[in-house]
Amino acid sequence: MDHFEIRNGEMFAENVPLATIAAEVGTPVYVYSHSTLQRHAQVFRDALSALPRKHLAFAVKSNPNLSVLSVLRDEGYGADVVSEGEMKRALAAGIPASDIVFSGVGKSRRELAAALDAGIGQFNIESEEEGVELAEIARDKGGHAVATLRVNPDVDAGTHAKISTGKAENKFGVAYHDAAEIYARLSACEGLNLRGLAVHIGSQISDLAPSRAAFEKMGELMRQLRSAGHSVTHMDLGGGLGVPYRLGETLPGPDDYGAMVAEVTRDWDATIMFEPGRVITGNSGVLITEVIRVKPGVSAPFVVVDAAMNDLARPSLYDAWHDFLAVRPRGEMMEAHIVGPICESSDTFAKNRTIDVVEAGDLAVFRTAGAYGATMANTYNSRALVPEVMVKGDKWAVVADRIEPETIFAAERLPDWLS
Ligand code: LLP
Image 1 (tube, rainbow, N blue to C red):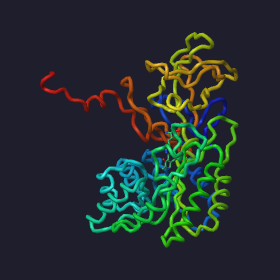
Image 2 (cartoon, protein in one colour):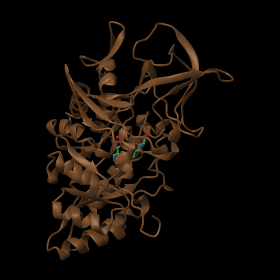
Image 3 (tube, rainbow, N blue to C red):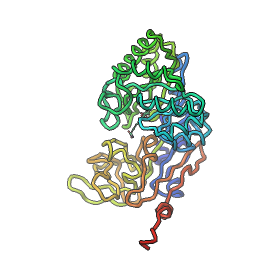
Image 4 (spheres, helix red, strand yellow):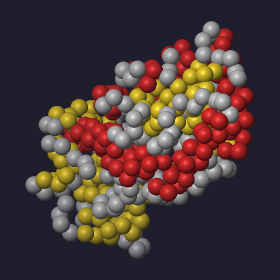
């Protein structure tokens, strides 16, 4: 459930008409609903209430906006970060360092050192090489790093190939069949306090069976390690739960996921850790866009909107579906291709889609844009960096400015041999 609804013929975010935001901030603009974020954070946590010991770290990559992070902080979430930049954001949002988990296959030496200095709670290391390096840096600093070992369970998440991470051929984690030996060697490393295992098989997972299979494999490995005398107190199950992108679509939700996890982990006697991203933020945001014009096309007209693949990359990258709804629907439908202004054909949001009838000057939204939306935006074609707004009840505020091309090219320099 979210708080973007049509009331009296026009779409609201909570109690604010989207048209008001568009008129004042301009388009394109992302809009997040505070109540929806809060609700999703609570629903996910409640779904895991059967677990005796758990830790929730919001996957910052899905939406790193500082206001979004503040909402999650207030809901008691830590942060799952994958770069020094994300770590800095989480800390700036007031998330305690001890609640931060540092994931990622390519943490640099500098990032490892910075995270140790910041006192982050856990590193999810992705190779023996990284573990050895981390131990060495920690030792040099006279301390130790708390870590888990990320394992690649060789399970097909059944999601888009570009966001699948748990197959043997993917770059993430250590191979399942090597994991016990690597765990043993790293456990002996001074400077490293290896306390468990981590797994994450992919994102936008719409079937619980692959996650269950991966978690069961991790449980077996945990038992094997314990019987070899190793301590395993923490099991990080990653993120990945999918969300409905189409109105009316049903997917396993947090309750189904929570029940599955509770069953699989019932005798684990470990702290179970989670890194949810999309399930919290996905349906908490929309991207408002204005129709620039409608022009004839071969099989259907082109609806040219002022948002483009640089603002919302998912359709061009993953052929992702985002519902497109008029802010003031006329009650009639049309078939159209929805395209942005960027000079390449991949700047296409939808082909032959049945949508609300729209005309030049109309406002519309791409739904389910709160996750992997603004954070993946760029300035291709020298377009501005898209702004973000948060709504809470009757209140709203710009939580990230539109960054104009002049500001961006102000960072560019002409060498003296060119000017
Ligand atoms: N933990 C790890 C280690 C991850 O790699 C990810 C996502 C998450 C947690 C959070 O997953 P979520 O709960 O959000 O599914 N840009 C793509 C998604 C990439 C996901 C990368 N890793 C998209 O727009 O679909």
